[in-house]
Amino acid sequence: MLQLTKPLAFIDLETTGINLGSDRIIEIAIVRIGTDSKQTVKRKLINPEMSIPPSSSEIHGITDEMVKSAPTFKQVANEIKQ
Image (cartoon, rainbow, N blue to C red):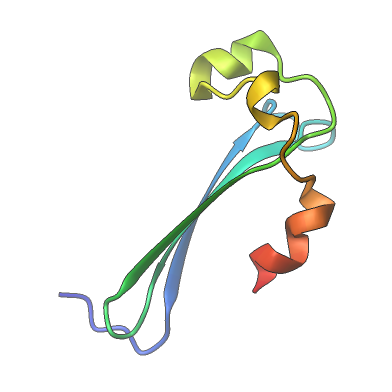
């Protein structure tokens, strides 16, 4: 068993593509493991304010329809930081 002295978090991002300069985040998933081994999982869809290319949707299964009413990254950035 893992003996943690500080919490540990794993972050997974799904994006509109692989270009860091132009592509955007469309999903953030965070798994947090506390020092007591308690796991917390959070998942949030993000509106990228751009179309998701079909080639990206084929990989992660997230479509424009799924994110059209989701908050933007700017709207959830502080919540994610917490």
